[in-house]
Length: 488
Image (cartoon, rainbow, N blue to C red; front, side):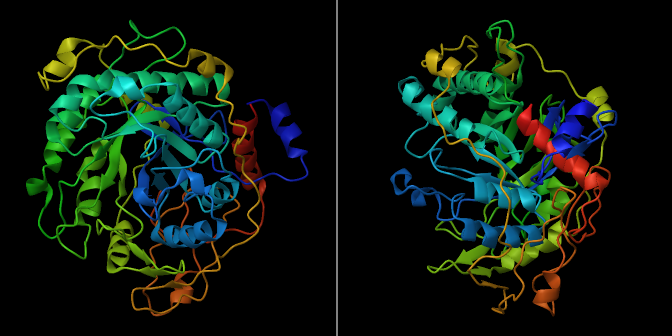
């Protein structure tokens, strides 16, 4: 980064505070240092799957989605900030509407967003992927990329969710998932001003998820075109192996998960976890597994899910008026998050220790599952002209100022007591949110809400830090760093 560029940016009358975009380095996510001469630091996902209303609640014709309602996002940003979350996954968005307020709110509280590009009505078919890998699908996929590429807190995009989930889909779908990833990565290269990771979320099947990882991880440069790679930049597992109150490290199979993925050349994390066989969940898999020994190979995970839906996995209840009440699951998860220690490996150490991806070939996959597809010759992009010229979505997102600090909705703790101070805490140092060590069920809910957790690139402890009000040199540098990512 040139000093002259920083000075020019500093001359702007106002700079939007922005998280630093994450990068993939070897098999880990890394938060770059604001000083280009210094190492970045490992980033571990402490996350929640976020789709209030569920997939059935999405209606593209309604002109709204879960990231378009400023008050709902302020409400949930407060709840998630107090929980200690640094990442949310959003399954379905409308790419044609504005998301600036919500994405800026989550950015302001130190939360990254990873997004699925498909919708329930427009995705790769498990039974006949060739018929759905078409210009219509790519118009949506490229539209999502355009809508979210300008936000520094966009962590990445999922090309698919459980597209391969049985023996039949394992024979016909992998090529199309990899082809879609190729198209997405090429589109980002041509039309975004930074590299944004593209990955996949795998079904909860021991054999299929490892075979799909091998298929998507390997180096296919001998078959890929000159402009883009088709491999996954990261790999998510939807895994419900460890049920709190029933399992431990030995009975859950987490030891096998560690063995299966410890040689991964790309980041692996739980894109869904949090078995609900027993209720309320106590989430022993958090401190005892995902952020315990599994952290040797995994980069954290996303608990399923934020709001209570028909599947009974919710951390909070949202009533018909939009008010929130915390469930016991929320408090139990908060207690678990308060007892984790996040790794702090340096970028240099990650580079030196990361395994190298194997070359793609039949044995890479067939040694794991002999019935899995091993064809690495990918179908051509069905919308080559759109890929090169752009999808035409003029709704390009950007960070805006966050003027409101609380929503119109009430938030109650598990005892039913209304939390009086529900203002989000904005840290001027652009720091990543982390567990506060507190609880919204403590004697004073107001006091518990007065501190927001954050984590700088130099520290990943579990102690909470109050949002600073004074803008210092460090905060200016961080703001400029995030801004420059959006400009260059």
